[in-house]
Image (cartoon, rainbow, N blue to C red; front, side, top):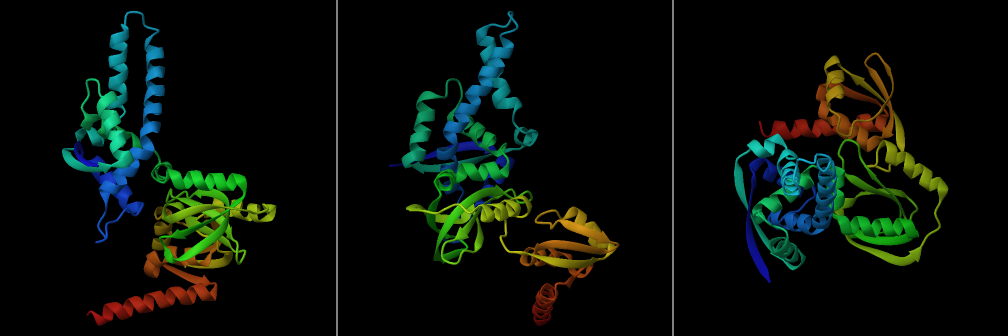
Length: 329
């Protein structure tokens, strides 16, 4: 059974929800963002947590207000509700014009909507309740929001890590491959605020990393593996520095212009850590591919001088770009 609900939310809030849907790769067959599929996952995976947070906060506020005997219990509950549902919202959400979001729900998401409708509204509309739930979700850091949307994946992986169980899955980045891996660590990147599984490949023993939102058809097998402390230590170091890549670090030297130094200070996403500086020369110990991807954004303001392989790779990148632009001139 399927039902449709119309929820009115601030335009800014809807935009940020759509951004998450795109980041977490909820797409329709035509490539457009599937906001409805994303919101259904949000409702199912965040509903219980949202209620628990709201009830815990309400108890705290009521306990504090209870110290003022002149405030009646009824007034205290009204004040607590107002604090939770209005004052905790972002100013942008309050000031932004509202827009309608149509939710087409079925199965578990329909059960959640009916539970809200039949038990939790009191003097509030269904649209207000669901809008407050969405706003609460967006108050969580992005890495935490990813844990909410992909709760089942996180739960299975954490259980496998605890039990030293081998898991199999496919990845949205390589749909034709079936990976069989030994899971060790889940870590969030500081810049992207996305979560990554750090693990080893059972067939080749290679260190691997996978973005968790791209893991599909995950299965915890009955096979187990003996934990290797050396491997765990290597993966922990990767988790602290750069969980997006399990590639081995290379010694690198990059010459930056003054403008390049300014760019390096402000372009923080996936920025490599500096080992040392000598004037305009910056030295790194970082995975080559990550280094190349980062400095490709600098144009003439950064030249990778070493290693030679990275120098050649970035030079080839710009030569191909020049050829493409020349062909279109």
